[in-house]
Image (cartoon, rainbow, N blue to C red):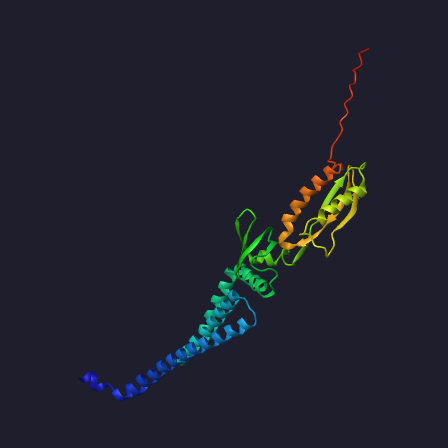
Length: 279
């Protein structure tokens, strides 16, 4: 009783209980209201980005980044209500962010490249591209890597930094493509007949476009053949099928017309030299 009587209960309540109760309630109120505001802001941001045509993957990632940044600000505001020196806390966050940034510099480079790929869209899912030293069909694009499928059904995961930092060739970006073929005939063969055979074969293929018109022109007087550049235009999806069919049809058509298709060959002449008798 002597100990309790020596404590001024009223002073204790006034000095500690009431102020700390107010601080804790204020901190909780700031945190709860802040979280509610963050949810509203992120929801509005998602709608704006969706209307702007931003990719869903980038939309979600940007929302997560904005949510994390605002949550840190809300936590700092809550701590300040408790009387905590937020300057030292911010210094700790800055040091931690610097350390994480240095440790994840390659990942951050891939992230920034992924953002650029998603924003500028040099290719889309389903396109056949050549990038990062490989070629294949794009299956998915994320903020860190791109997944491609090769012609022999292999799955290749390429960091976005390797793609955006190099040359990107998109073979399916345009609706039409030109097939570039070189057909050689012998020097003794009739050039006009050969050109007519090639032209007739292309005229019979409905997949070859009339506009732009296919071209046949003398390309080179090579060592063992007279080479024609044959350049028909087709729809992009018909490229490989038409290319293979044309090569087969050209060979059969030229053979039927009696036009030879030469191939490199060498003639080796051997001379026998008699050794002289010793004097």
